[in-house]
Length: 181
Image (cartoon, rainbow, N blue to C red; front, top):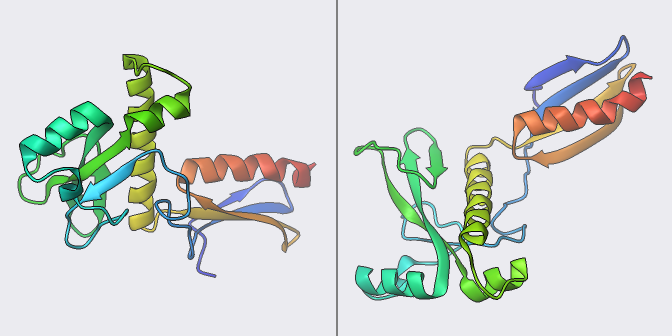
């Protein structure tokens, strides 16, 4: 195991060590996702789907998306790493359209138990898409974490697969409370 990213002393004899997860789950393959990412990027195609699956021309793609999907554009900034977002990076040199994340309207209705997709439901779906893209970005950049709780130098507990350092730290602190008492 490598050096910890962060060490936190909880008490005199309890320490939390946060590490990079060296074998994280792939969020696009190992998790249930609402959205499917359609991308033609030459190095990254997280779901293995091409934008052309949505239509033969940009007009046809847009028509299909509007009629049958809740969707958002996914942008990438690629420069010694990759950043993904549902918003443009406004950098004409190293960023641009990465793909489209979309969910079939019938799947959205089923997921939220609705007959009609309102603006509120669309906003929820967009929030889900944002989280899915953030997880993928963390995965691509090796920013997935785990923690080990040690008491008197002995490992008491560990947990892995956190796609956010703050969440890993908060979870570890909560778990360590019982050992510090």
